Each structure stands twice: as structure tokens, then as C-alpha cells.
Length: 499
Ligand SMILES: Nc1ncnc2c1ncn2[C@@H]1O[C@H](COP(=O)(O)OP(=O)(O)OP(=O)(O)O)[C@@H](O)[C@H]1O
Ligand SMILES: [Mg+2]
Image 1 (cartoon, rainbow, N blue to C red):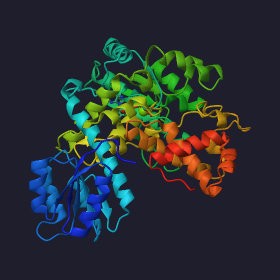
Image 2 (cartoon, rainbow, N blue to C red):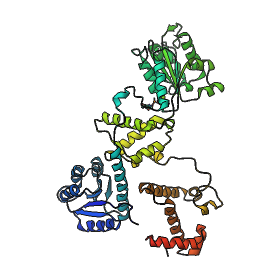
Image 3 (tube, protein in one colour):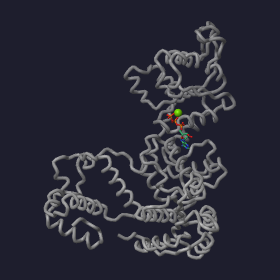
């Protein structure tokens, strides 16, 4: 089988035999191969011929591969460089990646694997070329000094709400799934309030043990309990004149809820173990990812406290409901992460963006932020590719379809209706194999994937039956004549089958 898109490959190696065998294998795939016997010649040829992929030996007379690699970045920055070395050290591996190699392989290598790697590099190269065309900045971080990015309609509503409520002294309840930006919004409200110069403190009600939360919020007197060696003021007291942010309020116990209610209603607190009442002026902003209404109905949350908190509600949309914002958010994150390291921001390939747009983001903006940060570190060149993204983004675990794929009627007619991969003993590796086929196909811009799988199945059956067509057809659940036809097609396409 030849590679779908022929490309120009430069092989830089001082070993003539190796160059020859690589040239033969690559030419067999339809690629044009250029040879260089030293780094110096290689750089000159890269400049002249602008290859797509460069296979580069590390140990050569003259410049080393790592040195050549650095020169190549200037000569042909778009090329995907694969460094080959017989003397692997972690140092070389790290340097290869640092200087922008696409990958790094150890000699001796399996030629078929190297060819597959070249194919992958070419896929990435095409991806990069299309990213180059569409590269432009979507946002200017200076326009987002609050750190809240989003131009989708639901986010515009959120921003308007912040504007409406910030300058009042009203209590605000922010709800939304985990990672939607509740804390960010709480801080923004505080910054735009009349108390902006006052203190802002956050208390995470879920993170503080029950026996300490009261003291955390209201403080304690010396000797109030074992370990209370000195008087300690609580967050309400410390926030006098400012804003207190009660995060994860849905995780607060009922007894603590009662005390918080009193603090809000009367503007008065008492330290644990104390007798005097202190007047405090605190603006309250609360947040939760729980369904407080349902908790009230289930008597897990005080109804009166709920109404006290729910004076003004800001509902943060889940990221999957405002996917238009994803490119903006990514651009913002890339710029910020680069600025923090004083680097030029990386770009995002179209394929990577497609994957990021298709993902459901159960962890919302926080998850996106983590994924972008990780990809930013993993990306070897100037561009983040799909392969720099984590598995869960590339192949989300959707609910399995109730029946086998309809495209294969013989499978569907099988007695078990569960997906094929799960019915085999080797289910996991089967699923992995499918995954590999799927991803490879995706990189190659779609051959008929069903025929790819068909070929594998036929090959498997013919191997097991040692070329017995009748038995193979029975195992596969297809007509013998269909099998015959397929076998002829496969042989014509140069696909080896047991016979
Ligand atoms: N609109 C946004 N623009 C830019 N960054 C955002 C936005 N929303 C959230 N983030 C970022 O995502 C991360 C998570 O936000 P935040 O901590 O405010 O979420 P949360 O709703 O409080 O989550 P949790 O419920 O898990 O506490 C933060 O790093 C924040 O800066
Ligand atoms: Mg939070």
C-alpha cells in the first residue's frame, strides 16, 4: 500500500547502506527521496529543496544531528524532523525535542514502523500548513483584565449581571457546574463593588472540617476549645468593610447554616466561646455547583438561608453550552501562558481545534485550561497538534450504542447485540486496535474505514483456517463468493493474505 500523499523526504546520514535501504523503502511509498551524507550538506539541501520530512542521524562526522537540527530550523522551519540515533541518552532525547524535532527513534529500528512514523509526521505537517494559513489572534489579553473571556450570548448575560449587581450591596448566589468560573465571577463582583478597596476573602466550605468551620468563619476566644491557645478572629470579622466569598456553600452543614443565617440577618457575629456580639459589615457572595433548590426540597439546605442568598442569582453556563467561546478561550490561554514564560504563543492546528470543539468539557473552563497548558508543554514545534491532546479529548467515552454498527449486517445478525469489541475475550486490545485504525484513518483524511476493518477480519480468518475459504466465509458470516471477490480485490491491491 502506498502512502496517500507523496512527499519529499530528506535523509541525512553518513551510513551509505542505511541511506540506501531507507531510500528504497520510502520510494516504495511514492515519496521523493533526497540524500545527504553530512549535516552540512543536509542543511544546504533542506534550503534548496524544502523537504516535508527530514530523517536525521545524530552521530556523524562534522556537525552532530542535534547541531544540524538547530540549523535546520532556520533552513526549513516547516519540515518535520525525525532524529535517529544509535547512542540514545536522555540528554539527546530531551535536546531533540527541545530543538523542535517531531520525534526521536533508536537505531536499529523497524523499517515499517519508521515508514509509519514518516506518514504520521506528514499528517502533522499538513495539519501545520493549514494552521499557518488561519493563524491570527482572536483576543487581546489586555481587553480582559478581569480574566473573564467569552463573547457568547450566555456569557454576555453573565457580564451584564455582574455589572448590574456589583455596585449594589446585595448578596449574590453564583451557581454553575465545576470549573465554570464561579470564583472568577465572585472576585470580579468584589472588584467592581463599592467595597473594592476593602478585603476580599474566600472560604471553601467543603475543604474545612466541620469542627473547624465555625471558628474559621466567626473566630474563637482563647481557650474556647482544646488547642485554642489564643484569640483568633474569623473571616467575617476580617472581612469587615469588604466581601466574603462562601464557596461550595452546598457543602455546609445544617448547624453552620444556622449560624451563617444569623450573621447575614443581623449583621452580628459571636466568636466561638465568646459572649460579646460584634457588628460587622460584610457583603456576601456565595457559590455552589449543587442544585440548592433540590437540596432545599430534600431538607438538606435551610430554605430561609437559601432565600437570603438567592437575592441575585448568576447562573454560569456550562462550556458545552457556549462552545463558540472555546477558540477565544484557547487563544487567551495560549497568550497568557506564553507571556508568563516570555515566549511567543503557540498556534493551534485545525485538527486540534476540531477535537477541542467536539469535546464535551465535563470539567468546563478549568478542564480546558489544563488541557491547553499540557498541550502547550507537549507541542514540539510552533503549533499544537491533535496528538498533543489527551486521550479523553481525542476519543470521548460516549455511551456505547445499544446495537452493533448497522454498516456491517453480518455483525448485526450475530446473536449478541453488544458492541463487538466487548464480546471478545481480548476486548481491550481489540478496542485498542480499532482505535488505532480509526486514528490512523483520521490522519490520512479518510479511506473507506469499513473496508480497512474488513481487510483485517478477512486476513484474520484466512490465517486461522490456513487459507480455507469455505471455513473463513462461515466464520465471517459472509458468502463464499463475497469472500472470493474480496480476496481477489485484496490481492490486486497488493495486500498479503494467507493462501
Ligand atoms: N470565562 C472565563 N474566561 C477565562 N478563564 C476562565 C473563565 N471561566 C473560568 N476560567 C478559568 O477556569 C478556572 C476555573 O475557574 P473557577 O475556579 O472560577 O471555577 P469554579 O466554577 O469556581 O469551579 P469549582 O466549582 O470547581 O470551584 C480558573 O483558572 C479560571 O481562571
Ligand atoms: Mg470554585
